[in-house]
Amino acid sequence: MNRKRDIRAGKTTGKERKLTRRDIIVFAFFLLLSFIFWYLNSLGKDLGTNIRYPLKYTNIPKDWKLSENMPEKVSLFLSGPGYSILQMKMSGRHAPLVIDFSKVNYRQVQNNKSADYYIVTSNLIPKFNSELKSECKVTAIKPDTLFLSVR
Image (cartoon, rainbow, N blue to C red; front, top):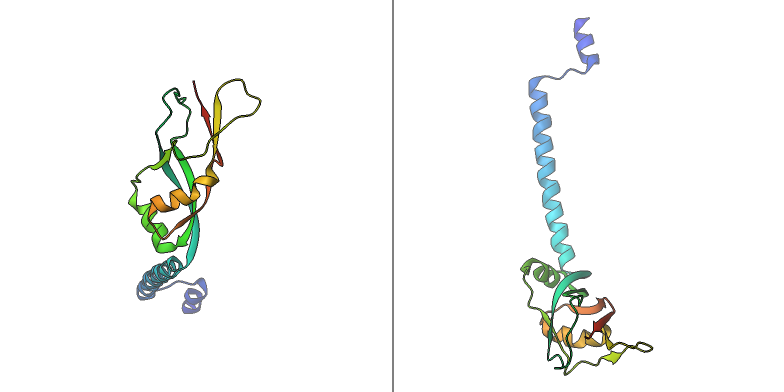
């Protein structure tokens, strides 16, 4: 009768516990292994992501003094093979993208008495694609407009 009580209570022996722990370790190992294979498989496909990239302004007209609130970084929305995107994200340091005022098309803000200008960043996408030298392509830039406050 005591024996039946032990079985009903669900008590396990030490040997059965070791099997359970071993099973959990084996399960966790194969779960990790399957995650690694899934991740490697997904890197082979085209992915999309965004990455913060620094900016550098060059050839600023002599009579201009840019305000301090000019953006130092922009968000680039990239699409391309997962390996290339991972490589760009893992590199950490990025050479700044150059906005050359002698080559960029900027316009003056309408109905504004001060000397404020703007640049539409979608016009910079081909230039940024050539500067990145990667299989990834820039599909969009945020902010979509850079406002230049000239003093």
